[in-house]
Length: 392
Image 1 (tube, helix red, strand yellow):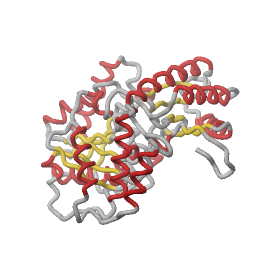
Image 2 (tube, helix red, strand yellow; image 1 turned 120 degrees about the horizontal axis):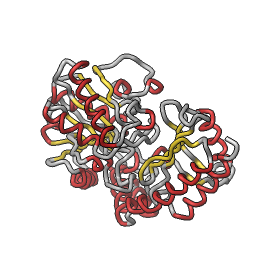
Image 3 (spheres, one colour; image 1 turned 90 degrees about the vertical axis):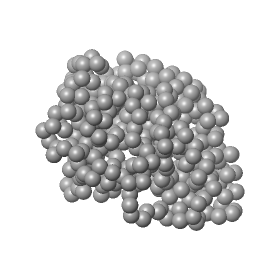
Image 4 (cartoon, helix red, strand yellow; image 1 turned 60 degrees about the vertical axis):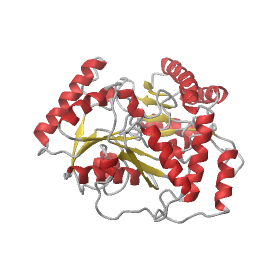
């Protein structure tokens, strides 16, 4: 990445996990140029060949039987639609969400975002209740081993359903790994245990894969696959377009078809973005970027752990693949240190390294480079980080 002064930067945030394959990919550029020379827009009122091809590929990879896909323009819009599907299918406006979660900035997604720092309005079309589990570092159950931690969170889930709801809950919406919430990682299997109980009550499970999808974690194609669970609805966006405005919803056929009223998207899944997304995914699969995220991400994580051993301001290194985070803390090893996070962000930018920031307290450094990151780039980023951490 180069700025207006011709200064180069190493991108360790990927446009908020959007620049998945990298910059200037010839195959993607060629597909966009070819489509732009033919037709940019026609709307979803008409069938579009590239839209059908992309929908079929995504549905086949979703893990959902009898899956149907609806394209949107963003992750916010995708989550908005997922919530409309779930509440319509279940005939209920009661929604469960995770504490410290983030699902978008629309009137429907702000109320199910579990962070007051991202909720500017108290108005809501939903009756939302928040569950423990996504953020072990700041959980009241953090002293427990993973199995006991999951047991405690399951008890919390069932208690909230019993005590705080009126029954007939529509859904649980959850990120497999928190995004804006600071890349916090719950124990593997948590959402699988949740679903065991949700299914008995008919409650749908929505996996928000806007940031964790497409092999970003290095372990699986979707983040939910670490939990032994099959969602009823999956939302996606960001990396599939590599910067193009595209998102969408994958759902079981009967759930997608539960909307009785008319519904189209003027721009969602238009010819230009679907051609670009197809070329982007083709490059992504051909070069095994999920495998690269696992391999290079593991090297990057090991380097971050070494930095944490040197600098007490790092309270925790966490994440999977190329979705990693540093939680910065005070001298007590736990209190949030937002000032240090802000200073590190600016120091790194001045040194040519772009990082992200997040967490409820604004004290988490988010690291999510393009999934094509090389070992040399990983080493360079670690070296810059080491220099910038001195004196914090």
